[in-house]
Length: 156
Length: 432
Image (cartoon, rainbow over all chains, first blue to last red; front, top):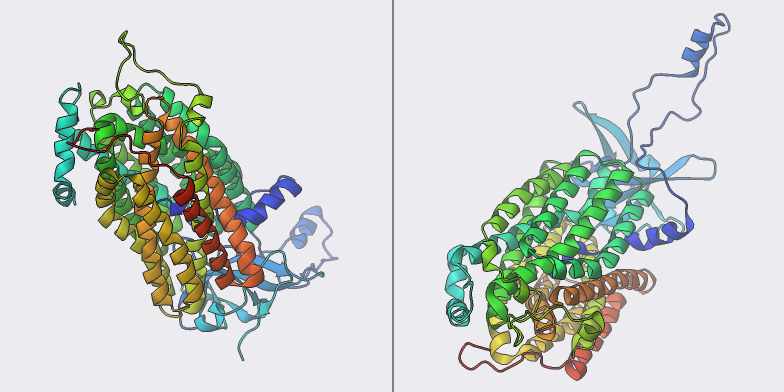
């Protein structure tokens, strides 16, 4: 079809509901992660406001996660992280990966166990490695926002 | 490609001459060539705005909720803009200028998306894009009709469809590679840059070559007092035989058709391991090659046989495609079946503006009619993706394809039983 590029995205249906139900939402946000149970070590010797302010914040080499490219062990680009799933304690349990496709057509969303992801460096570029093969990913059950997530575990 | 296009329709240029002889403003060759390139570049600049936009926004760290919200705002605004867009083109004195402004707006929209991807700018860019597109679509058909007149418009629409299919296919390949190897942002910068050659192509069509009355379907004749046939009321346009039936047929067509490609895409992604991306690309590009190859012939045949036989072929292929997709699971077979989409694509690409030109002839509301059908297209396509998505989730992809095939049967039946032949007078000697 000549006008295939104007097709509404499948997300549109879900978003239509949020358009009606939800209020205005806040634009692009990035999600960064600290190590679990971040340490706030207080120094009791120095009680000046400056030191206190310093100790309440920390410098980390943290990387934002959303939109990050995902590879398998054999260096294939398989998709991007598009969402994170947390349990009721706020611990991230899985990442939603948008897998495959061309020009946005034919992508599949797959929830992958958080511990199946490795955050590594390729030179200076941070990369996310998923401990699954391409074939394991492509047949993983599709993640649907409206249903309980079925999470693909690492292959071992 | 320019040479082959000319060789393929020797009769059309004859037609131009015979039809143009008693008429002022015989279409000059440059106008024809300019329109070819304009169709080509407009197809290019529309490529990035599809599903690719959500890929780009993902890389810009947008959340799924925001992406969905922007896309929904865009598609709802797009539906609402169609009818006013067509109405504006009817009123515009210069169709070329209307098209030119629309191209500038689309270029600007792409630039906004590339350089400032925040929520507010994206909503603005999307509104700008859908507004401009609702003008651009009808304006191209209006320029075509104004350039060659009703007698030669079938062949010329075939040529339009060829050039926009070449643009679509090439842009999908180039932009896909660009997004993959350079960056998703680059796709929108390239889009903005391509607005320049689109504008140049448009500028090469002389304003004098476009008869503004003919371009609105005011059929170029004058009343006895020498006044142009003006714009009729909207209600008398709607009463024109065939318009509402045709709108229904087109709605049903897109209800059956629109979800097929996305479903095929995710099916191929799931079933094929090594070549999935290339196969999905083939599913997109193969139909465009078919459209490029056959649409001039479709235009020619629509004039020789009439519109109904071609509509029946184009609508008849769709249930077959749905049934074959429901039945097959081999990725290579799926690509072959997708090529059938090119057949319906060529028929729709030529026959939609052609039928509307027929039906609206003498009303001066050709572009409003296009807006009405454009709105039906959007409604059909949106409901298609929603409905097929639910079916695929609950019952599986095969059932979803079968459901789409059933709707396609309904669309075919609507054409077969309800749609009248709209070609006004059988062609005898090149004149209508």
